[in-house]
Length: 207
Image 1 (cartoon, rainbow, N blue to C red):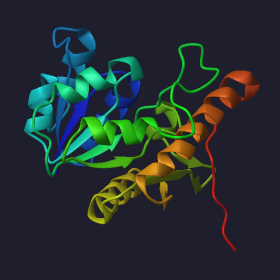
Image 2: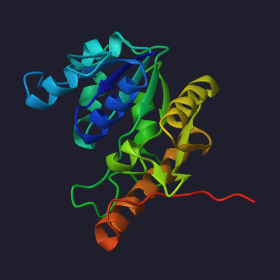
Image 3: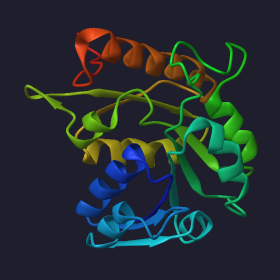
Image 4: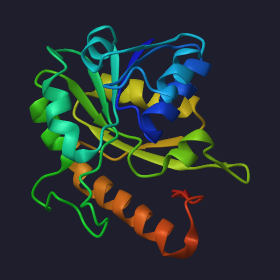
C-alpha cells in the first residue's frame, strides 16, 4: 500500500518506519525535509521524504500524526482528500497534559473528519505512546488498540495494518467514539507520567 505520513514526530516516524519495514511504500510528509531526522527516514527501504501535501496526494492511506494545535492547518493544506483513508492518531491534549481541549460533546476525531472533507477517517494509534507502537508485545500478549470510524472498509484496512504491527485491534464503534478513545489517551498519559512509566498499554480480556 502507499502510505503518507503527515507529521514527522515520534508517532509519525515510528509508524512510518514500521510500515516501511513491512514493505509498504511510505512518503514522510514534513515541513523540515532538511533535518537529520528526515534524512535518516529517507534512507529506509520503500521510503521518501516529501511535503505534507505531496505525501497525502500520492497515498491511498494518510497517517495524521501532528501536534493538536497544528492539526487543522495541516489537514486543510493537504488538498482534496475525497475517498482517501485517513488514520487519525492525534489527541486534543491541553499543553499541560491535564485535560482535553475538546469536551464531551465532540472530539478531535470528529473535528478532523469535518476538516478532511470526503476522507474516510478512522481514529486509531492514539491511545498509547510511540514506544508501544514500536513494540506492542507485553510478555507474549499483544497490546489492545481501540479504533473507531464510520466507514466499514476503512476500518477493516486500519485493523489489518494494526494487526500486522502486532496489536490486538478492537473496533470501538462509530467516529463519535473518539470522544472516549481520546479520554483513554489522556488516561495513558496520566498513568505514564505519574510513576508507571511509558512502557504500559491497555489490554482487553475476553471470556
